[in-house]
Image (cartoon, rainbow, N blue to C red; front, top):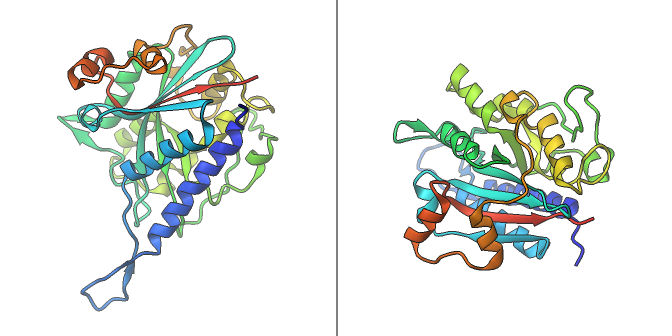
Length: 288
C-alpha cells in the first residue's frame, strides 16, 4: 500500500494548527472587569497523542506507531522516538521532545528542569548513547499575533536553495509542527534563559514535513537523503551531529516492537530501554 508521507505529514501539521486555532476560540470566563478572555490551554501530551494517532491513521503500514506506559516517559524519557529505514536497510533515529506554544506566544516549558538537570541536556545525552540518533524538539504552534518573516523549506544552509516540492513552496502560515535542534535550545538557554518566545526561536525552526518531502529537489526516499537534509537545515549550526550516520541495525527495542515481542511488564521495559525511556515510538519504512 503506497502512502504519500509528504502529503500526510503536511496534513498532520495543518491539523495541529487547526486544533490550536479552535482552542484559542474557547471562552475562559473571568471575574475581572476585562472582556471575557479566550483560549483553552492545550497540553503537549494532548497534541503529541493527536500526532501519533494521525500517523497511525493516515500512514499505516508505512508508519507503525507504538505507545508505552506513561510511567516510562515520566522519569527522564522523551516524548517520542522516530526511527526511519529504507530499502537498503539503513536506519536513522530522532529522539524527540515536544513543546507547545501557550496563549502568550511562549514555550513556557522550553527550559524545563528536573532533578537539577535541564530536560534539553538529558535529551542530548540520551540521544548520544544511541548510534544514528539526532536529538530534536518538535514545537507545536497555532495562530498568533506576531509579525514573523516568511519561511520556506530549504535544501541547504549555505546556498539557501529552496525546495521545489509543491508542498514545500506553500506559505507556512497554518502549519503547526516545527523542528528545532536540541543544541540550539541549549545554546539559547545558556545565553539567555528567559528567551522562550516564538519570536526568539523562529529563525531556528524548520517545517516538520520537509524532511520527508525534500532531498536535493526530490522526495526524500532514502535515509542518507534525510540525514543530509537534517544536517543542512535543522542542525546546520551544530557540528556535534555531523558525525551521526545511518546504522545497519536499529536498537533492540525497535526490532522487538516491529516483531510484536516487547515485554509488557514495566520493569522489563526499563531494562530493555536502558535509560532511554519514551512515551511513543514511530517506525517509518521509506518506499522507492
